[in-house]
Structure formats: structure tokens, C-alpha cells
Image (tube, rainbow, N blue to C red; front, top):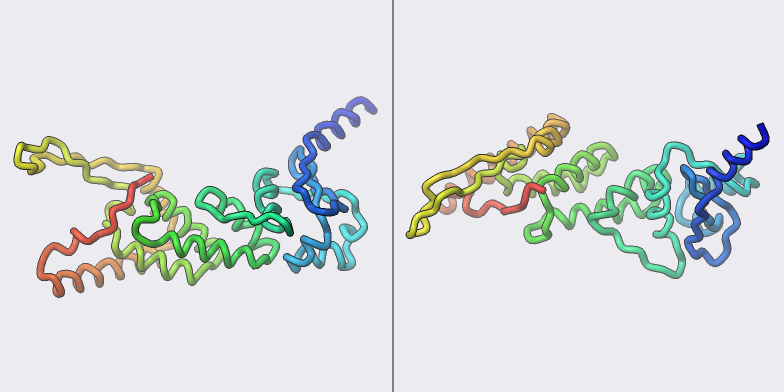
Length: 234
């Protein structure tokens, strides 16, 4: 029994992570990792952490706190943003990793995540359809209404079939540059993502798309589709 207990302790306490806070006075245990952090630093950046460390909870005097239901890699990436001496940047790779935790712990970082996703909804940002739909699904989950409004406007400039995971690929091209055959490819993963979006959002996208096409057709009296944003599926 003692041996089993020792083995469990070793599994729980292996691979300590020190994020470099000037003073570490509490340890988070996430999955199989120990993460050393500073109470005052976290309290100053989150009302949830402030209540945890300064309120009438058992965590106030605890040296170790287990964070259940979280991934260690996500928590580490999230906590890096509170280091007083190091500037951490939000990127396309980590924004969806840290946003749920920023929401849970009520940090200003949530607004920064929403700003980042909003700024990605522009031409020439290398945003893919797959990532765009991930952003929209996340925006719906966490009530990011400002981002969703911008995302709907952006989607109005994207071919509706592309948002559904369908892409027209040119086939044989003659010597004059004319495409003589087309092939329609479909990414079913993207198609499923689009169907996961709330019907209200999908309707708003379709409505904005129709308004945009009607406006362009009246303005230019030509093919409005040529001005669509060209973004890759994934």
C-alpha cells in the first residue's frame, strides 16, 4: 500500500515547471505537472485568483492546489501572460488555447484575445476557413458579440460554398489561359464545423452575403464574385 502511494506521488509531482516568477509561493498541480507561481501576481490579474488566494477558501493557505479538468500545456501558456518581466504575445497558435482560461478566470486577457481574433478577420492575414470557423464557434461559446459582428461582415466577402468546405479547383487550361474543366473538392471536416455554428449566425452570414452581392452588382453592373476574399480552406 505504501509503495502504491509513493508511486502515485511520483506520478503527480514529476516534471516541475518554474515560469520564472520573482517569488513562487504556491504550486498548481495540473495533470502530472507541478507549476510554480506567485499568488500576488495572479491575484492582481484575476478577480477569481484574488478570491481564491485572499478570500475564505481553503486555497488561501494551501501550498499546492490541484486544477481539475485542465490541460497542463494550456495552463502553462495561460500563466505566461502574467509574468511581470516577460511580454507574451497572442498568436493564431495559442489564442484558442488561452481564451477559455481567460474567460474562466475573468482576466483582461479575454479582451485581448477577442481583439486578436477580430483583427484576423481582414484580407491578407493568412486566415484559413478552418480557423475562421474555429474562431466563430469559440466566439459563440463565450459570448464574444463584438468579434462575431466583425466575423459575419468578413464572411459576407467569402464564397458561401467555401465556408461550407467546398472548393472549385481548375483542371485543364488551354494555351490561351482558359480553364476548360473544373473539379469540386470538399473538406468534410470544415463542412461539419460550419453546421456546428448556431443557426442565427449562419442566417446572419447568408443575409450579409446576399446584401453584399446585390450592392456590388448594382454598383459595378458586373460579376461581384471577383472581389471575394480568397482564403485557403485549411
